[in-house]
Every structure is written in structure tokens, then in C-alpha cells.
Image (cartoon, rainbow, N blue to C red; front, side, top):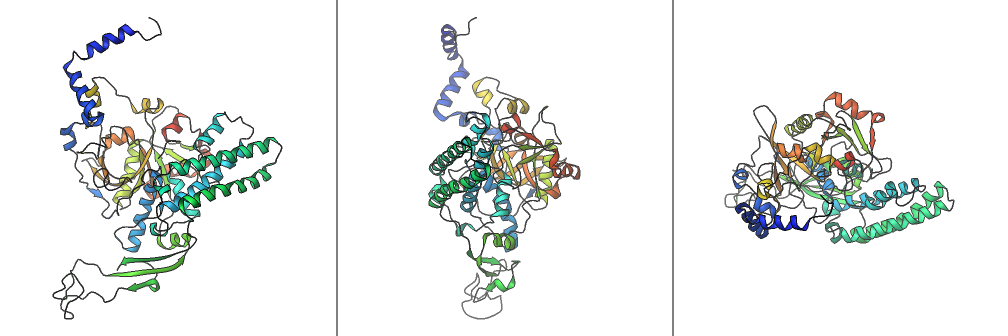
Length: 499
């Protein structure tokens, strides 16, 4: 047997293929409708329904990241807006992802160039420098990236800094940003080799960051330093009463007043009993940090990133920190506490039972019939039969898939509900995506519990839903195990691939 591919063997295989009826049916199906549509098991898909015993009642309008890699930001902001919606007593709210994108890119540029200074003694083809130059200014990120933005720069409503052509489709902007970054990296490395010291290199870095800031302003617009918050809110809004103003004329209740009325029954002047009185919130000249302080009642540091990555090399119960990945210098670090899948499930359930959605991540394109016409919202292990379609065994364990680069945590979304079995374990999750309301089922996906165990395995959950013994490990950062982005743990966590 030679190492070369045998042409005779290949011809025999091709001739034998069409002799099988199942092969002919599979070939005709896939070549006409693609793999997922041909592989879907319609009977199994019909068994998945979007009914959940635990669900967030008011979730806000579906968001859309468009052609950008900001899933992590949308997921995190969709979690945070729940607190703002409750505080303001409104049915929906959306933070500006353009504002977040501006400062995410600027902070990433600063962090990357700082690491370029730290690695000037390494050749450009070293793994460390190559990783910095390849992924330094991509769109991807993690939950702590978003929390760092909130903590340092604040937030603004979407109408204070709307989407632009470059935030909706970031490829061209990212191309120019990466060129500016690599040019700056070359200058810093050249000056370091010429004997320039660290302090002077940092001063030079600050000058070079001006180019990044310039590109961001051109592509996204200047982020507001102050803005006016003027918003219709509900009667239970918890804002400063001095900033709340009634809408006049006030709706009349049944039996009061004559004439046309202003409620839902104009003929009688009565007001529908389900209609909520409303008012206007006016808070002028707010800074983004003041907006967070007043209207986003949550602590961006009070969460834990839980993952479930089965591996003999990376045991459960330990915290793993991705090196050279943090988007902020001196911000919260990119860390993950590895736990058994059942512990992760129970923390997520506890959060949802308490009325709080939570960010999650998975390998969303695995067995995802995204482009079929029917049941395009079902993520499960049994509703798409690819093995049966091709007549081969493609099964792999989760551990093997992670070790052999078949799967990683590439896409962040938001858990908004869960259906439990008789033992209190999850059967299916309600997942809010950020691909617009026309994707999935009105913007949502149904994710079976076994699919999430096989292709998912990350949540970002508030501390109160995590067992105390796990919090002890999380809080002691001196015990963190550092991992490279290209290690099997780094790849499993989606380093350089999260979009």
C-alpha cells in the first residue's frame, strides 16, 4: 500500500456509489436543497414546541448585530437591559452597540499595542506576536469585555448613537483599523530595536492610537460625551420624581368626564382597564456613566463566567485565564470557571427562576438548519440526521470534538427561558438571538438540553446563583491557571473565533 491516492480505488468507489438506492436519493436531495434541508427529520422537529415552564415575561424587541461579530456585546446588553426595563417600567429598551463598539475597538488597540511593546524581543513569526497581529482588532469578545465598557465608559441609549454602515457591516472598517494597528506595531517594534525605552514607547503608542481614534470617528461617528434622555415610561418608573412629567391630558377613567375622552373608548370617555398610565422621563445633559449609575441598576462585576469543558488536562473546579486576550489594560480579566454541566445548568435555572436572563455561548452552527423554511429555529441532536443522510458515522464525543478542533464556543446569545423535566433538569432552553426578528422563530431558538451539553457549555451568571464553594475558587485569582489562546482550552473557549 503506497501513500499516494489510488486512482483505481477511487473509480471503483464512484461506480459503486450509484448502485445503492439510498445513495441516489441522498445525492439528489442534497444537490437540490443542500445538507441541512435534506437531513432534517420532520417528525422529530415537530416534537419541539416553544412552551416553557420558566420564562422571562418581558424580553424587549429582538436586536440585530447584522454583518458584525458583536454577538457577545448584544448578548450582554440584552441581559443588562432587563434591569433597565424594570426600572423604567417600559416594554423594551436597547443600548447603543455602536457606542460599545467604538470603545471596544479603541481599548483593544491600546491593549494590543501594549502587548506589542511587551513582546518586542520576540520575532514577528513567533506564535505570541502572530496572534496579536491576527486577532488584535477583530470584532469578537466575551462577557467581561462588555462589562469593562460599562464600568469605564458607561452606556447610552441606541438613539443617542445609532448604527452606521460600518457597525452593521464591519469588514471594511476592520480592514483599515487592522492596517493602522499593524503599521503602529511595526513602528513600535522598530523603535524598540533601536534602543527606545518603555516609557518613550508608550508615549509613541499614544500618538499612534490617534489614527485608530480617527478611523473610528469617521466610521462610527463621535461618541456622545453628554446626551438628553427623553423617554415615555410607565407609572411604576423608579426614576427621580423631579424628572418625571405627566402626559396631558390625563386619561379619564370610566364615569369621569364627558365628551370624546382620551382612553381606549373615545365614544364614552372611558379608559381601558389594562392601559397603563404613562409619563415622560426627562434627564438632560447626562454623561454615559451617569446614565449607568441612574438607570442600569446592576453591578457589572458581580457575575461569574462558568464553562463546562471536559478534559483530563483541564480539570473541573479550576479557573482558567486566557493570556493576552483581555480587551482592557487593568480591566476585569477574561477568566472561566470550569464546572460539571449539571452545575452550570442549575445556576442558569436559578437565574431564570428569579426573573433574570443570562448570557450564554455555544457552537451555534452545529446541526443548525438555519436556512430551511420550516422549523429553522430548532437546535437539537436528533432533529437533523446527517449520519443517516450520508450513510456514515460522524459521531464524536464532546471531549474529542474539543481536542480535535471540531467545536468551540463561537457565538453568544441569551437564555430567556427553560422547560424542565420531572426531576428539575432542563429539557429545552428558550434562546434570544441577535440576528433580527426574521431569523429563527421571531428571533428566538429552541435549544434542546442535550444539544447544549454537546455543543454549548458557557454561561455568565450573577454571583448569587453560584454555589459558595465555587465562588471561593472564582475569587482567588492567584490560583488561576493561565492558558494560551491556541491551547486546547483556548480553542474550546473560542479564542479568536467568537463572533
